[in-house]
Length: 235
Image 1 (spheres, one colour):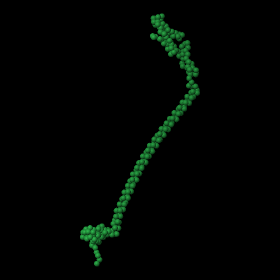
Image 2: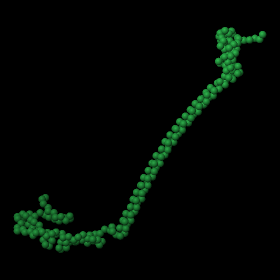
Image 3: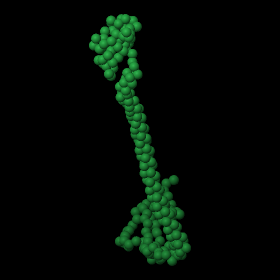
Image 4: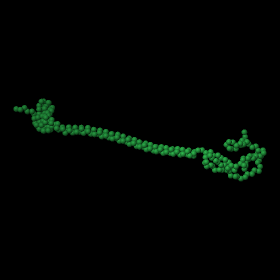
């Protein structure tokens, strides 16, 4: 008679009834096996381990395939996502740096254009000033060549009639002749100069006369270089 091990359906499988070293074969209904078939070995009452066959391992690995693929894909996707986010962050940082550099370049270009405009304006002002200076120098040299800046000596003279006139050595227009005596005033009349009094009189000959009484104390007088008549009184 062939040696047989404990066997039966899974619903009647009771590990506590097995003895050490005993095998149990589940013929059907094992939920952990794809086809419901399994084998267990007992190490002590209630202590059993399932023995996996080649077919069980293949089924188990095939069952894990989807999980492994999902895990690998998720892991790869996570890494790719992280790399993508890193690339996006680096791209944004690079774009911000590029925009900042472009702004700096634009500001520098605007400053350069402003400086160039100021330089052009200053150069135009300098050229205009140089033309004006050259014009004034040419006008001055022409005036010098024409003798317009040569000095002239004006000489006065007074006629016996008291008319003051001028002559010059450059043929320039002379000042208008004037009467140094001014308009004729009313004739004065002095009947008598009191004691101690004196007076001046311009005679018809144009000379200045001093009139005084016999007992008048007339101060010393002189006409100085400034043309004024000075009376010296006191000490």
